[in-house]
Amino acid sequence: MLRVALVLFVFAWIFGPRELRSAVPVWIVFLIALGLEVHFFAGALRRTPPPLPDRRPQTVDRERYGYAEEAGDLLLVREGDEELWIPYSGERDDEVDVLIATMREQLDDDAPVTATSAERRPLWPAVRRFLTGLGVIAVLALVLWFVEGRTGWDSVDGDTRAEAVARFSDEASRIAEKPVTIRCDESRDYVGLVQHADGVAAVGGDRAYLTPERCHDLYRLAFDGEVTSSQTARALAVLAHEAWHLRGVSDEGTTECYALQSGVTLGQRLGLSEGTARQMMRQQLTENALRARGAFEYLVPPECRDGGRLDLDRGDTRFP
Image (tube, rainbow, N blue to C red; front, side, top):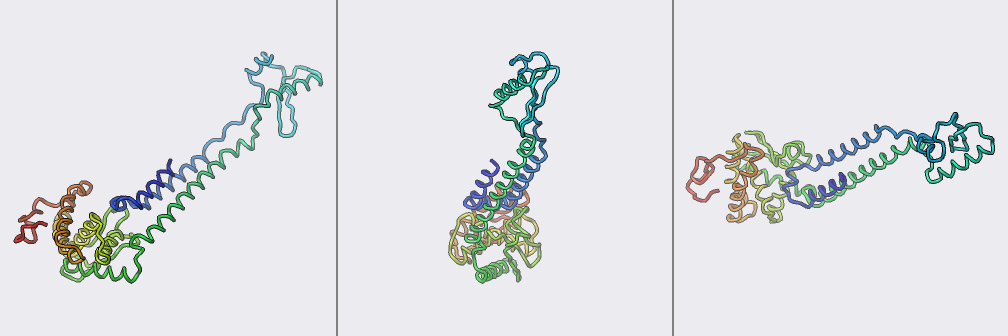
């Protein structure tokens, strides 16, 4: 079930909604799966081997086959790997042979388990399951690498990526009102891992980092004219948000309010019509309350409204 769940999640992460990629870094899922495989394997190795079977005649056998009372002695007969315990009460050799034959007939349908097989049985299935799990994880990692390398930000050639980043930096500099640099964090050293953030910037600094997914959304808009609805809108809002941080605004709610207003002009400069850009930012404003449930500091203040204290253009009744 663990492996089936991993396969389903990876395919959902690749082909599902972009929000899933932003919320759950896929490498964490692979680490959890690997940890569980190691845990199960270690547990199998620590498991106590089953006890060796008692080859002596049991009480029920004695009662069924006429040995109701404990015999004075038990005679051990070995032939190769076979061991037979025969009740012995002074029988002659020919009588012992009859007892041996009778005992063999009784054990025909119940072959004895040797100590060697009993000791080895728990180990190989555990190793096989562990290797199978590692194989599944490795195959899914290769599939993910293959798909990402041909569909995401990594699929864009180096020169074009550099041109795109320069364009993003120019647009952010307009909002920050000073020269700033935007970087797409391909190594995910700053964003997109445990932070659950699409971007990060030092307040008043000159550099911001965006996730590769948001960079790709901006690239598709600016260079290919492709719009992916909420993904494009979110990418515009994130770029504008980090640019306002670089401008010196620290409060997250205020920064988000300013970003949604600047996002209209930013969207137009990257290829959207004014109506589409404004509609996208209004949708982002509507969704702000939902996203802020997990991070209350990002909730825009009540003054983020037409004519409010945070309205950047009070002469325009359209907001944002």
